[in-house]
Length: 254
Image (tube, rainbow, N blue to C red; front, side, top):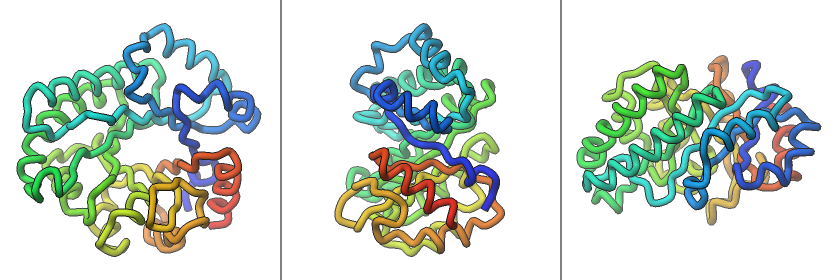
């Protein structure tokens, strides 16, 4: 394991942060802050600066970008333009917060695109070319998260086509467990060179329940053994305080 595993990040929605701020500051948690779509237009530079002031203990940060209704690989150019503008807004806010990385969803679903990876990739390269340039200029890495992918080839292809040291993968253990038809070693073999962050949560393969590490069926030992020696950002995505505490304890045991 690497040094970052000793003090992982904890995923928390921006809208919920005040509810947990006392716990967060007491534990001096590193954070991944999720900015959802519902109230995104209420945000401005002033709100982001106030957020930074609240986090006065100087935690390490990542940001999770909005994703609802957005489509980075959209065929419709207007839909893609809206997506790009949203993504550029989150990179702008990140210039204030100075996160290590911003996590985005890939937008690929084989049912939506009729397994035409080429169609999704064409729009994706337009979107990510613009957004990655802005992020790279600001010294912020981009991490693309697996969601509905049932095997890793589309994400591998995106990484190869982007061919940027600033552009990598956020491997989500819970989403793999729920949606993948391919075994974990196949994912690691395809994506290991590009993985810069891990989303760590568990489920029993019936729902994306975001349980604590070890409370479901995902093989965390296999994952950590396969990534031994690789410097990743470790982000706990359990959705309860108890689940976060349990996940931190179990992560340290690995």
